[in-house]
Image 1 (cartoon, rainbow, N blue to C red):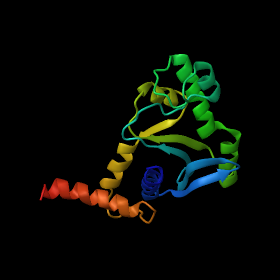
Image 2 (cartoon, rainbow, N blue to C red):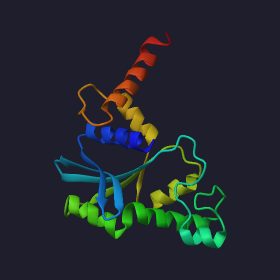
Image 3 (cartoon, rainbow, N blue to C red):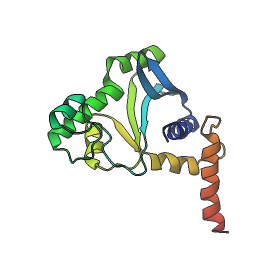
Length: 184
């Protein structure tokens, strides 16, 4: 679902007037999406990571290798984590996804000198404390439902042409048909 969900998030950004680059690599690191657009206030820049689950079994953030070893748990274990363990795993996940030197270097190489908004698009989340901790770290969180709702109700004059256009238009057709005509 990763490629499909990223395509739909990219389409959402494109329709909002952003130029996007997906899968930006710097060394072994990868950024899901970088998006920029020109506004009257200057260039607006967004670093967007996408992780969608419709039936979450575990946490967004895996245990670190050290935590896994010390606790004797699989990194993706659904075991209920004490707050100190959760904080450490989220901190490591945020470093990997947004704050590492390689991620900063990739953003700077793509568009030097910009101030980036850091954003996380998520599906269903099993442990809301994770989203709260992510937000507390300065990351904007956006539900995938918000993205899909926007795509399904987007006006016909919106920018189109990304990899997710066809799927977004099918979703929009479904919503329109359901609201206008009812079931067959």
